[in-house]
Length: 227
Image (cartoon, rainbow, N blue to C red; front, side, top):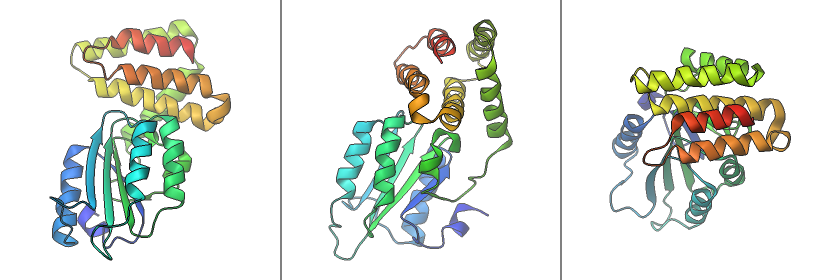
C-alpha cells in the first residue's frame, strides 16, 4: 500500500516514515494536494533536514511545537528528516511525543527504523513502506555478531567496510547505518545506563563523520575498540 493510500487522515500526532529526501518530497505533495496544507509561506508548517539531530534541535522543535497555530483552529505540522539522532535527543523527543498538543502533527523520516530507540518507535504510527527490509534485518544481525567479536576480528570487519567505501562499492551512509545498527543492539541489550559508554562512543564517531573530510577508518576503529 502506498503512502497516499495509507495516509487517509491526520489521525495521529506522530508518524514514522522510512526513507529519505524523495519520500519527504512525496509527503509534502500529499499534504498539499490531499489535505490542502499550505507548505509555502505558512508559519504553521515546518520541514527541516538534519545530518545528525541533536538535543539542541529537539529543544528547538519542542519550543516551536508549543506555539499555538497562527491560523485559528488550524494545525501545526512538522516534517523532520534525519540521517542520525543522538540518544539524548531521542529522550527529549520522547517527552514531546508523550504529551503532544492536539493541534500538532509530527512526521519523522529516517533511513532505518533501527535508528530510533524502541521507546520512541512505540509512540509513532508507521506509514508508507516502513516495514523492516531484508537489508535492515541482515544489518542488525551483523551488528549483533560484531559485538561478540574480539578486537582483532572487529578491525578486520572495519578494514573491509572502509575498502568497499574507498572502491565506491559502498558509501559513507553504509558506515552510518552500521553505527546505527550497533547503537540499536547496544541499547536493546544494555539500555541507556549500562550501555552509556558505548552509546556515547558511537554518537561521537557519528558526529565527526559529518565533518568535511572525516577519516572513516579512524572513527570506525575508535568505535570497534571502545564499545
